[in-house]
Length: 123
Image (tube, rainbow, N blue to C red):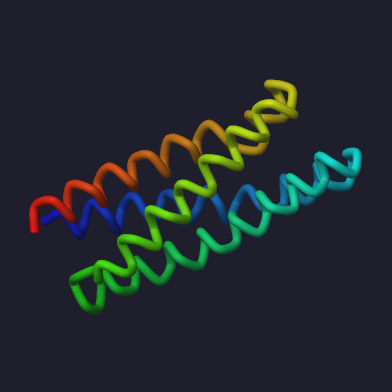
């Protein structure tokens, strides 16, 4: 059942977002104003995704289903997080970009979007 894959993917994304927040805060204390604002947006989006994934995992466990609204929200939040990672790529050195787990988050968001899209089509 695809719902279990979704739960697994969301758990990984949630953990990565949760663990990245302190790294972003650390970098915010060391950067110039423009980059700091971008990192602030990234931090907020990580917090939103952390909580959204927690909610999705609860729905997968307790309801054993996901509403179309949750699927849509997951896709939208992933797109916003992907866009932020792409903007950060332009402003950060490679080591800082990797330190902030942008590549991992990009990959996990794309995985969640793909599995979410497949579920929507199959229903």
